Amino acid sequence: MAGHDLAPAGAAQLVYLDPPYNRGGRFDSYHDNMPRLEWLDYIESRLVVARDLLADTGTVWVHLDDAEAHRVRCLLDDIFGVDAFIADLTVESNPKGRQLDRFFAGSHDRLMVYARDPELVRLAGGVASAVDPADFPLTDGDGVSFRLLPLRNTNKRFNPRTTPTMTYPLYGDPVTGAVSVEPGPGLVEILPVFGDLTPAVWRWSRDRARERVGDLVCRTVRGRSGPRVDVYQRDRFELGRIKKLKTIWLAQEVGSTDTARAELRAAGVDGFRTPKPEALMRRIVELATEPGELVVDLFAGSGTTAVAARGLGRRWVVVERNPDTVRDVLVPRLRAGD
Image 1 (cartoon, helix red, strand yellow):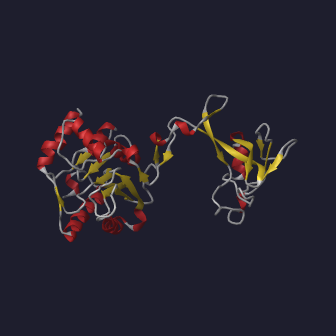
Image 2: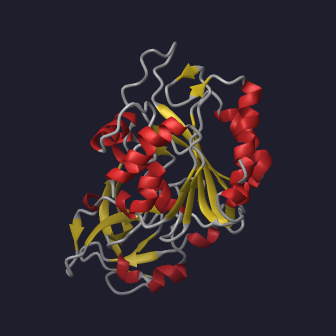
Image 3: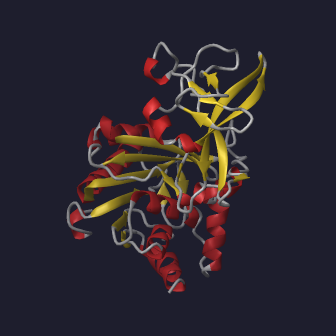
């Protein structure tokens, strides 16, 4: 495979690889039983192509399971550099678990993400669809939903000894909820403390608290050491708000192999055993690219990457070496979406 036959060097913002997992299986669409060293050479050559295709701001995503993921991560370290590592995501692909597995019922895949250039990489850490409006149960006078978050840093590693500039008094009226950075009539001094009354620190600096004092409110809380006054931040829900994603992606968020098979059947295609769900590929494409940018998939398979990229307004190039898969699965699926 020559990358320059697919696209100019540095043209792709995202390269996705979903190769055979090398677990010894044999499928109609591909063989999954190459000798390990031969398989690793095969994957290494594709990773080099991926590196050459990527823009300096781009990322490569490699989808595997536990059988070879640790070895491929070593290849990724060698080809892209240890500092280029971004994440090793767990993707729930089979919520019921594979009951034929010998010891534990496998239920997940691995998705390793590396940057072409860790200093220049552009990658969203979250998506708007991950924000649940139900997490903002309160409403302010303007009708905007919000929630209250403790202004106190709840991590005990951050304390007056480790971050002394983040501990200072605030002043508040627990009856009205008003908070001030300066003392005043009827206001009580509020210092950050943990539930056991050991000293804590705030999440905001004094200057930031002064600038955004209107977003602060105080409340009387009853802890294990008795009542005390604490300070909270009004965290408002806004359209388009982004929530940082966790490193475990559940099937209820991104679909499963069963979901993907149902999507294929809905497109009038059947017989491909290991498709990826459209929600998963949409998430990856949204995180890694902007509209109009180029997405490359070096193992196209059932064509989910192409479907997601096309639906999101990205340019795309996909590679599939099995002509039967191209004829019977990939092309019919893409035509079904026209």
